[in-house]
Amino acid sequence: ETGVTQSPTHLIKTRGQQVTLRCSSQSGHNTVSWYQQALGQGPQFIFQYYREEENGRGNFPPRFSGLQFPNYSSELNVNALELDDSALYLCASSQQGKETQYFGPGTRLLVL
Amino acid sequence: KQEVTQIPAALSVPEGENLVLNCSFTDSAIYNLQWFRQDPGKGLTSLLLIQSSQREQTSGRLNASLDKSSGRSTLYIAASQPGDSATYLCAVGPAQGGSEKLVFGKGTKLTVNP
Image 1 (cartoon, each protein chain N blue to C red):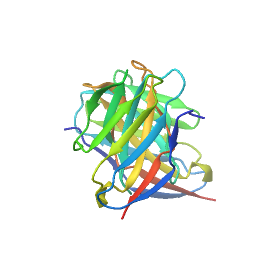
Image 2 (image 1 turned 180 degrees about the vertical axis):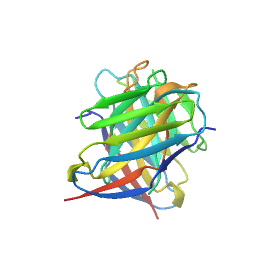
Image 3 (image 1 turned 135 degrees about the vertical axis):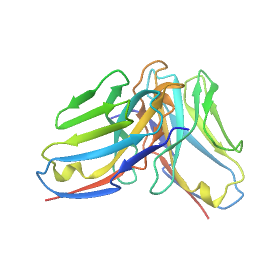
Image 4 (image 1 turned 30 degrees about the horizontal axis):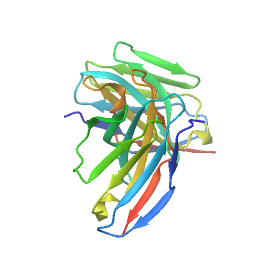
């Protein structure tokens, strides 16, 4: 059992709306990474947070933003939702400098 | 830009068969390579992690090899079981960024028939 939790499990939104996804990292982990997995594709790196600051970003527009809190939990915010944002959003936590990442079960977002 | 390719996209085998999944990557400057398992609609479970300086790793019936110079890795599953049915994903940790900013392939969907 990984200990990484994500909420909600499923979400339906309409185009143009905003969404916030949440991730609680495993105890002792100070780094959270977010990935987007479209249907039939591998996960794509969105960004990573370490000690409440963004520490690397993939090829995603600025309407994808995030936060990390003092307890190392994290949020992913997406503004102005588009149909192509429909995907499974995965968060992974790790201890900075340690290689093993632990993935949560994901949040499945459907944009209509 | 690092690209990861997995072949085949899908594989169906009878129970008990040994099988090999393939992964290739375009940039040999990697920090490490990992194999993950994903059950339908679920998150990822790490199976094996190979450092860039290593040639292989083993865990139970699983063996992963890495040939960094040729940009290839294989995942060997011995004596396959129906419970092995899942999608297997290969991911590389780039040298610039390490294993926390993984680049994934699209996966191989494995079905093991009883």
